[in-house]
Amino acid sequence: MCQAPIYLYSIATFCYLALTAWGVFDIRLSYFLKTQYFLKGRPKKTVVLTFDDGPTELTSQFLDLLQQYNAKAIFFCVGEQIEKYPELIQRMHNEGHRIGNHTFSHQPKNTFSSTNLQNEICRTDEVLKKLNIETTLFRPPYGVTNPPIARAIRAAQKETIGWDIRSLDTIIQNDDKLFRRIVRKLSNGNIILLHDKSTRTLRVLERLLQYLKENNFTITNNL
Ligand SMILES: [Zn+2]
Image 1 (cartoon, helix red, strand yellow):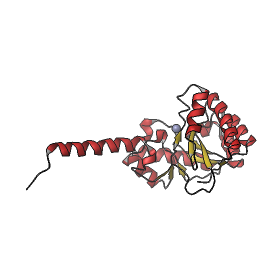
Image 2 (cartoon, rainbow, N blue to C red):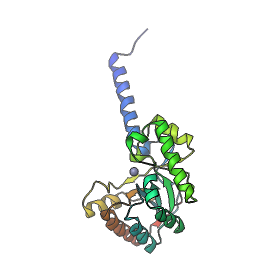
Image 3 (tube, protein in one colour):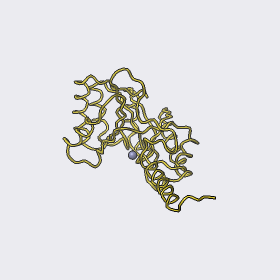
Image 4 (spheres, rainbow, N blue to C red):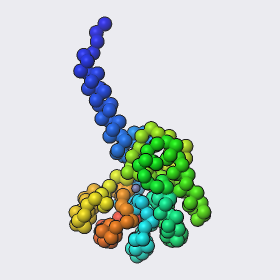
């Protein structure tokens, strides 16, 4: 019987490991679970604005700005922050924004294992329930998925929402660079990842909203 040379096995193993590692960090691959990261079949240019890790002391300014442009967004909120700013969650809800679960603590040590993650999702659901809000939407911290994370999300019966434009607004320090990075990637159906926790993002959001308006984009939070 003819056997494949050992190097072929090595290449196959390497490819498998590389793909798995890529699948862990790139939510768009839907490698471990079904993830929505863009909008399908919209007749005109439509995008979704998403804000992670809040609410924070700056969120009300984000809400003011969104209101000014009549734009409805999705906020993926952290349970600990919801407990600090429940009135902002009420305001988001009243103003037509959608709220998603983004774990309770956002800590890697609590969100990278199945049982811990399930607890984190549950705790945040309970905090939201006290405010009469329920959500099926979930976004894993850092967009990281792996088999235990996928198991926990399935057990919690959540829809996983990713993004196809990662603004890197927590890393890029320059307003112009950040703005250009987002608009360069704009097409139809993008889900844009932002964070409602810095004045830089707030400034760039204003430019982005203006740009979207001038270029006839529709902003929706209907996935
Ligand atoms: Zn996050």
